[in-house]
Length: 436
Image (cartoon, rainbow, N blue to C red; front, side):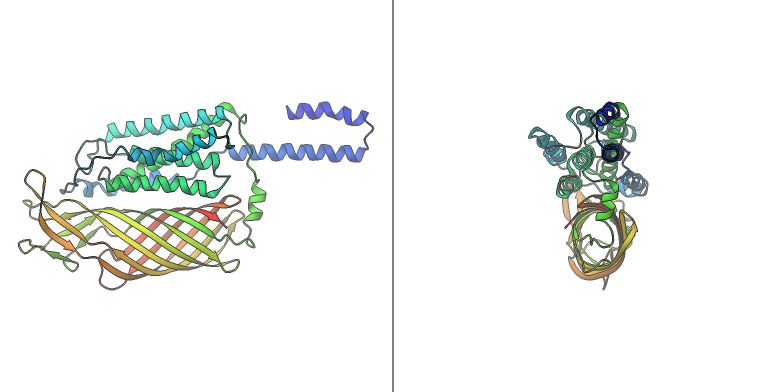
């Protein structure tokens, strides 16, 4: 349509007696605008690969956690809290509330309805197919619909929709959506409703289903109904050049893991009549979430303050088959500072190396015997709370998404000094950063 309009206007310019130079400049500006807008539309309609590694994490954990999940040691039954759906659905609700109040999204209403419909259908459909194919028993034994977590799938579906539609307005919108999604994962583990692999598989299904839904919508509807991105790739690259120090605040969501089998003899106190010989503490990989405030001293050097909370599931592997302990949860808290060296990797991405120092606190854990009738029996083993210094190194990659937002990926190794259980930890995380 624009090209047809341009052809119709050309004679008008000539007949009006415009100078050849003025006409040439005007045509050039119109053509450049058309090329730029077409380029922005194509960029918006590409398939987003963000989050593709999340379902892979769920698949890997499904295989590596199989023995842990099947190990004797039930978790106490919880109500599964239907209220968890409130947090899980809050990102999607926020998207449509803003739409209802006239806040301009990246999609017109028809395109947004179509994409959201596809996303919901794919997310729920894939989740239910997997649930009834795998038939994994929940930690509390209430049913066989554990894998994947539909709550996590819906939460990450909504967070991805919210980010795609309104993330260009403010990075805090994206951060808020993924914070709610991570919180949903924490709740489902805390309520003994899912294993760790379930929540990561659900998150992966939600993210990938949504990205695929938008891609399919664009193939069906085309560029009609797509609002152009406010900045082009060239403009984004200029904003993220080395002279623009990307200080900011990021949230972190990921996995913390290490050797998941541990002799507890040196760290625990047992009941007088309980023989600890041969008893092993087994844990799942953890979900970890937190924040990082990052300040760039100059173009390349940065300082950060990091706080993280880590949650994992734990069981006692007891040689005596007559004794079974209830499953429990491990809670770790990290407070760190980091110094990093960061430099551009491409026009729109940076890679950084950093050293990390701080403290780690773990809550105490008490394992109880499973008594007759699945009742809580006497205490069998207690691991005391500990505060220990820790240090490590890491690598982080940030990729610019808008004029004030990046998406990142990090791998850190942390060692906790002095006698301590779970002393060596690998932290693999995704991050969303608001740049100042």
